[in-house]
Length: 143
Image 1 (cartoon, rainbow, N blue to C red):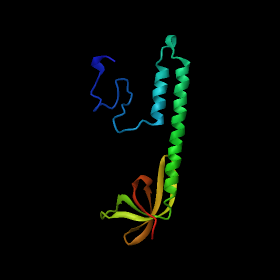
Image 2: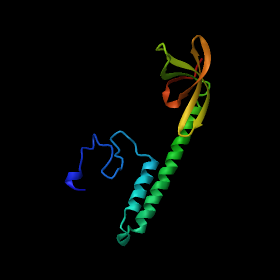
Image 3: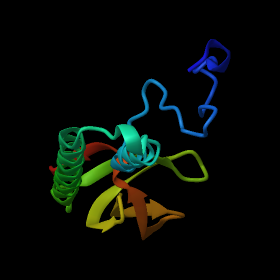
Image 4: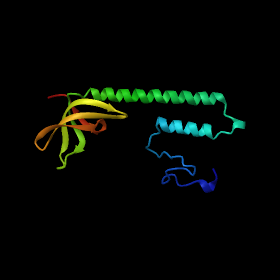
């Protein structure tokens, strides 16, 4: 990379070739890893190909990343399922500014999202409402 191509990466979101820049605090996911691997394979010189052991090592890293991602997802869902029946407070508020709280009735996995169905009081009625599991801020298993 030439000096003229170097930009202030704190404000830039992509390189000159369009590759996204991951900023501090942002995680790189398995799809980003795969894009990097594909870009590397696409842009390599056929007359000076990479060592095949490096390719195999990268594929092994990708497989490990995939397995860890799946394990993390399973553990998160298991944790969410353990709060069914518990009283929770949520990081979500009704139109009057009151924090939602109620009893978790079910947990559903929707793609990468985990949705908790909570019975809450809204307009003096108990209704079932969906929230993202990450919105749960307090769990009370007691009565």
